[in-house]
Length: 255
Image (cartoon, rainbow, N blue to C red; front, side):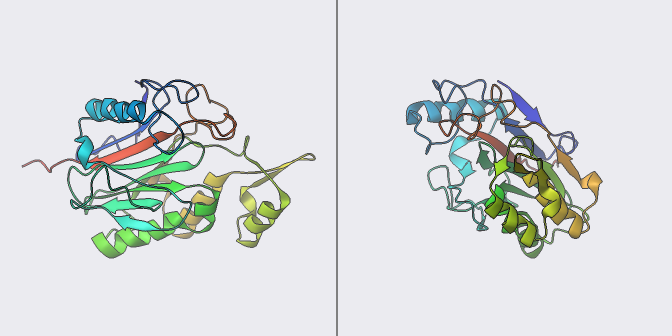
């Protein structure tokens, strides 16, 4: 199975944090092979088996996994022990300070983001597409972690997983105008023939405005559209595709 680890987060023994690729599962084309989304048209038995494979690989209890019904919003949910694999909330960010409750964010071009506060031992998983980024889902999630767990912006560790990059995300002028009106013109890439958007630039601008240092941020700079042999891409796969995922969970503190 192809799993991506974060150099930034791997230094912390109390957490497990990984991003998946499309390899190592049982799903058939166009979901081949490690699709983790139930809503894309894949055989649900195959999707469930893929979840079992991933849970075994990362050594977590699948029934405790919280995954989202993502709606391109700025809704944030606090995950706790009353929730489980079968009760996925409708939101685009999850946070928790509970041990052994894995949080999962799925994506097929949007940016999956994993968060860790090593001081207060809190984590987050964020789904940031264009709409979510423009609606400030990431800054709002950091605010929620500060409110609920005392997370300081100077402590937070942030990792962006594989996502579509500006090289492949062509947009129309109406969207470009919206991006410009919200103050993110630097995220636009213009040529004579087209205008493209780099969503991660929006996210980085938001973090910079909050005073978060570059040393606290890691980007896995893999474009899902350029590398659709390794990742699912809604655009490159012409809307018929699966989802990769980012997964993070807290382990018990050593005695």
